[in-house]
Length: 200
View (spheres, rainbow, N blue to C red):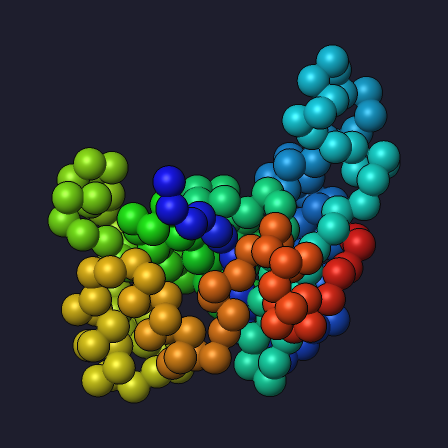
């Protein structure tokens, strides 16, 4: 098994607006983030979910002039897309989700107003066949616009099949901490400096 991680990025320069959107998401759909709606719904399987009333949601957030990056322990390949879709509806800003699984695939999805705008899966053909992978909406113009990159950079990115190379190239193009996961923060000094802990 190789590396796996997932993260979410909001195209915004307003940290406050992004945090308010995350709070609203917690209020509206706590289960989406692995929380129970209330204490009464908890049963003997307490270890797999937390109550909103019992503990706060811990997120790690980093921001720059264009992006708000978010890490959370419930973000994994698959769940992070559902969270990004719902969050984009609440905040009205583009949300990018990243899912990287076992060094075999890198899925990049872009949402706005609760709808997928573009998606690209970077992997070898055998991985695509084995997992039955297909992009929900392959629309490179939307992706290029949301990422704010040049056409020639998008063209080059689209030719990459290596998940790790695609993450490296995209990280370089958009100056985002794509190689990041909440579990890595205590062990990687750069991430520890870059991300602040928020309890919502």
